[in-house]
Amino acid sequence: MSFTAPRSWRRLPGFAWVVILVGVAGCGGGTEDTGGPVPASDPRLLFYHPDLEVDLSSFEETSSGLFVQDLVEGDGPVARRDSRVWIHYVGWLPDGTVFDASLGGDPFHLRLGAREVIRGWNEGIVGMRRGGVRRLVVRPGLGYGTRGSGDVPPGATLVFRLELVRVD
Image (cartoon, rainbow, N blue to C red; front, side, top):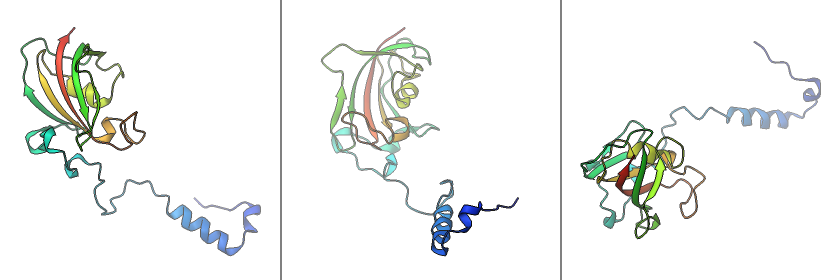
């Protein structure tokens, strides 16, 4: 396969071709390993405020990169992919800043798998039992990603403590 430039392009000065070729060469697919550092948003590379008690070596890491730690197992029904659940929660940034919480009010309710919440919750709540308490460390791709939301800045890793109150 060959490329023939349109006639109008053939009149471009030589420096313009250099700019075009350098620009095209820099537009790689972004999937090659450049040997550069791992992004700072990788949960394993972050410092967590000591009050959060996050030691990732004591968490289970899922295939998606979600970190899960059961604090209390619970003894009631199990939350499944399409369950309606009620939870109390607190959400922190790694520096210990609380960005959202349901404590002191009614439990937050949602249907798992219905895209009502971040992916980290949909994945991290499945398998909990009523009465269970779980800690999640959610990488940006399973949280609010590069857009952020409210008090959550773009690219933020999130820490949650979830207590499953009810499962239907």
